[in-house]
Image 1: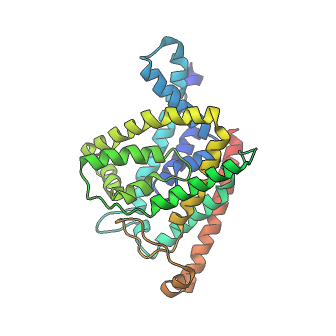
Image 2: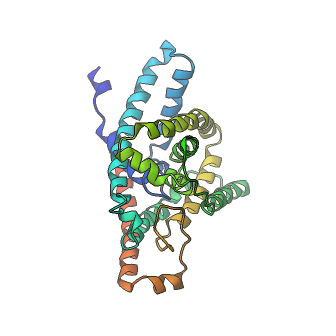
Length: 305
């Protein structure tokens, strides 16, 4: 019994890594889960958990429910802790903007994750054994969808309704490699609203946000579970495109680094006009650091397996 209830630090550590990714617009916790080799386990555990609730607690599924709950609770705890700390550093406060909102440091953060995602694009694609024309089309479709979404600038003012919508879309997006929940919140104008609600323990705002998240989970997870079981290679083709598309959001050099929306990227010529050479070199080095982070995550996957 003790073996089944002991704290699993490796799962908690994976949650920390996923929460760190979910705090950055353009990076998804699902990407980290895919790199770590726990993506299928995450989706299947969520599916078992939700099915147990939907079927009104069948006794024959109790043991599987307990295993799923322990995994999800430990993973979620790690994600929450990491998200709280990282958004505190990246977002900061009105008086002291965080690293992601300052032009002196934001390119470094974006470049780090650009390098990480660029290195890990091959993860879903190498799971596609039969690379047919239709799967290349699916990959391109995923790529195009992210670019189209990124170009939306909704900038909603707020309200409880938009928080519910944000929760449904963002928490669903967090489960998809290449689709960033933080990016969803950014385009909806709710990124700092949610981050500050977490920091200030504003349970009223968080209630509406998490209510939307539950709606998203109950509708998306069963669908994703079905697709992974029956059309895994098609799903991986789409996920490859989603991850490729997210690179546009993670381009380090942008016109602005505030929280009012997704700022347009700067071209190569504009980069040299707007940034010092030393800053550009350091930014590129952070991109290589992202590749090193990818290698470190792959070593973690080997430990898990």
